[in-house]
Every structure is written in structure tokens, then in C-alpha cells.
Image 1 (cartoon, rainbow, N blue to C red):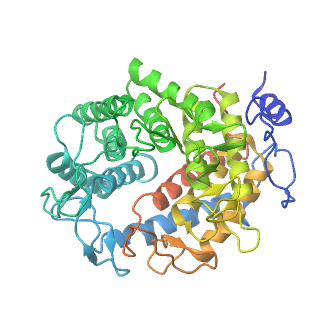
Image 2 (spheres, rainbow, N blue to C red):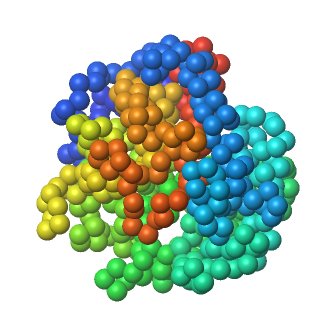
Length: 452
């Protein structure tokens, strides 16, 4: 079957979930046209593709990246500090493993795909050297937090040992892209070791990284699967590993079938170790995380040349955007969605917190859907979300606000300081959107060929 014939047939069949009563997107209040473009439109968001690309390059290279050199990037020791004042001065100089791995990924990926300026590679290398020297425990696990100079302060800041695997996975993701840039086999080996150790820990029934619920350990989290389906396609493109290939395929299936709850047409964020539902958790979802999970899984579907999975995933993005969108004030209620009323609040999306990072996931998933399928809904939601982001999140220093309430005012989130500056989601959105736009422009309006 030809690629476009496949996607047309898939759309008409409503392939969201086999047997699901929620096969069609939930969007009674939207008026977007059904169907797909046969070619990429000349304009997105009112801008020619070339102008949109130039706008993103300006936002990334002229506004966002310079901010970090005002203090967030430690040019002496290497590494990144992410609690900063708006002028770039450091408010807290601790360095978390999440943000070191993320920064290495960002600067290495910029160097690999967008700009061969040796400055970006040098910043990635200095951060990589700091992280490996001061944070690696030697066995694929990593310290959670160190000081500016590299002293372990995890316990001192009340965080204790790192029970989850996210830090190790972000470290691995950064090392994969740095290996692509610099070609040091040690980095690839360390990335593989970190991923395999993370998988080993996650499969342990006594794993505590997902929390303990109803006295049970080994809790499954959708976020663990999305890390694997995002990092492993990047790694496996560079190095074949049969064990990791099987893990990537397994976790694509987890996203498609285990976390997806056909009864309600949502993805559950949290499940027992054997992937059985947890009462009370099975009727809720986190739309932002779910949208992020779907587009990440789409990268694995592309690697596997699985058009059916790709179509299911992109349709689920649409469903989550449309069921969590605030049709009065705009933006998605991304942190929580309840199927039923609870004692605390009514069913539906939770409107009082809407994070910057979750809206960048919408912009990633919809751009990816538009590029490969030409779906009209993807363009419409991309434009609507982009306009919302530029209205409520942008700042005069280039780094977007982290969270707002329903009215667009700054929102303090529990356990997250007001000084937090994001060094990952915003640039990742710019990077991937720029890569998509470059392909679209190169293809002269043709949809990007899906590798069927």
C-alpha cells in the first residue's frame, strides 16, 4: 500500500485503539476540517516556511542561548545551574544530573544538526567532563546533585539518594548526542551502560523510583517508557544492540497497549509492576506527559517503520489536546485530567496550572504529525498553541516562563522554586521544529516520506 493511501485508510478507520469507544478524537467544540493536505502548506502560523524557520533560529541563537552564558553555564568548572534570576545571575549554584544530561543533549544536538560552531561542542564537552568526573558512580548510576565545584550535596539539600532512573537516562541521552558529535567510544559505552543499568533497576519488583502505592513497590510510570522510546532510537541509529532494540520495541508496545486505557480513552500515568490498573489512578491522566509520550513513541515507530503505530500515536495527541484545551482562555490543562468527579474537584482538565514544557510538547507532536501526514488538525492546533505560547510564556530575556495560571499569571508550583529556568524543553522544541522545517523546505512542499 502506498504511504498516503495507508494514512488515508488509517484515518478513515479511526485507528486510536482497537475496540475503543474513544476511537475518534474528543472535540465537540472545535470546527477544524477533517482530512489531510496533499502537500505542506506554504505558510504555518501566517509565516512562510522559510520565515518561520528564521524566526526560530533567531529565538534560539539570538535570544535563548545567550541567556545561559550570563551565569547559568559554568564556564570555569563546566556544567549548568538552573536556578537563576531573570538577568542570568545565579540564585542557587547546585547542579542536578537531569540538567547536565539535558544540556549536553541540547548543545550537542545543535552542533550535530543546526550549527557546526565549535563553541557549542566546547560547552557540551566541558559539561560532559564535569558530569562524568563528578556525578558518575562508576556502575551506570549517577549522583543526583552536586555543588558548583562537584561535591556531592544530594543529602545536604534534602534529596537523598536518587531512587529513580531519570537522571541516568538524561545523562545517557546527552552522551549519545555528544558521541555523535565527538566520536569518543567511551561516551557511547557509558550511555549504553547507563541505559542497561536503568532497565535492570526498573524491572526489579522492589524498584522504588516510581514511588510506593498501597504498600507495593516496582510501580510502572509512563515517563519511564517515554524516556526509553526517545533515547533508544537515537542510540540505535549509531550502534546496534539486540538487547536495547528489544527494549525499545517493548516500550513502544507499553505506550500503545499497556498505559492506554481503552475504557476511558486516556493514558494512565501510573500502574502496578505487572501493568495492572491501580484503583483511583486508572481514571486520571496527565495530558502534558501523555502528549510528550506519544510523539516520543512516534520516533520509535519511525525507526521500526511502523505506520500503524505512528497513526495511532498522532491521533492520541489530537485527542489529548482537544479534551484538555481551555476553550475560553486558551492553553491546555496539562497537569491532570479526571474522567469522573472526585471529592476535590469536578471531572475534566485541571485549569489552575499550565506549564511551559507541556505546551512545547504540543508544538513538537503537532509539527511532527503535520510533516509526515499533512493532517489539517495538526496545523490548526500547532498554530493555536504557538500563538498561546507567544502570548503568555515569552519574556524579554529569551527563556520562557515556567508555569502560569488560567489567566496567564505566574504560577508557583509545589516543590519547584520560582527561580527555575528551563534548559531543555524550550530549546528541544526549537531544535526539532527547525529540523522539521528544514526537511519541509528541502522537500519543496512534499510530505516527509514515512519509511514504510
